[in-house]
Image (cartoon, rainbow, N blue to C red; front, side, top):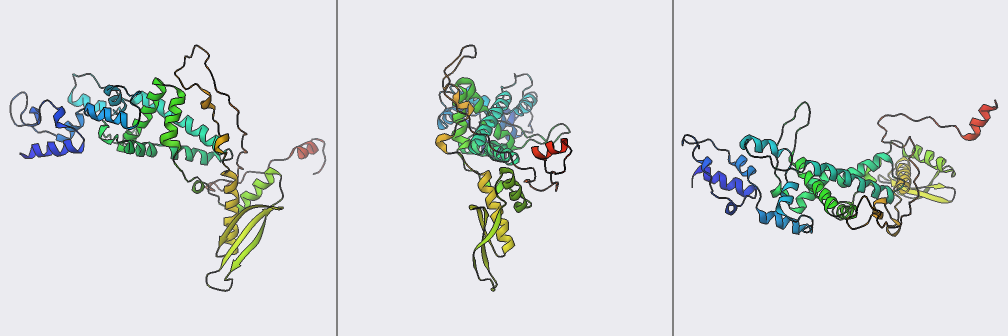
Length: 364
């Protein structure tokens, strides 16, 4: 076996190109030029990338993810796994052939649907979550890296057809993870297109929203004690006070203090540390985490998209809608409770009494 043949076999095996699906292997262009019959410089990796995945692999992929009724044909799966960057590579080697269908429109629609499902789910589950944390949580659930990871778990890596693109003044570089992330998005759009919005939501719930994401690590405060004071004042409760609950080894090299923060008789949070200041800092953080990470019970969790019928509907006819009871809107986070990058503290807003007194010319 020659050097070119060995490279062909190795490239084909890496890209999951089955030689049994090819009419001739190695191809003629790997050995001789079609016009003159002279030896040709041949790129086996580009040739292997241009070969379509086997039909059996596409069918097995549809059955593996449980969507054989939606991805009914191999052409549909092939389109969902073909990134728009593949068109440039195909046109370079086959200029006279029609361009293959890509998942560009499907991925755009699926990305919008996944953002909708993740936003309404997180907003209903955590009504007090700060806006910045909500955006970060949506990205953690259905962002590009998560979509690429889910595609790998689905086994879609050998089926992906794409072409790496460098950075241009108009667009950033296209990486493998970016192209791979388009596959789950395109599948979400296909489920929505072939079935219903409810079916697409269940698909996203099963593969994305059911994952555990550490939201606690996303909430950061520059001064949690001051943020807690502002928050408690906003809700109209007593000013929080710190109390030492437990301590050990005060005069040793490794003391431990446990501090609790109370608002009246209510305990808001608890923290420990090697100093009183550290314990109080952690207690204030714990108090804010308990507020912002208050979760709606699963049996009371309901999102607006759950009211749509589970079967394929008609936009020109009124269908059966499930009952929906909107949840209580959570209180927005205080302006000071941010990551602290700007170091800007918003001015305190005057109360209604102060505004009325100012209008009447009274001193407050």
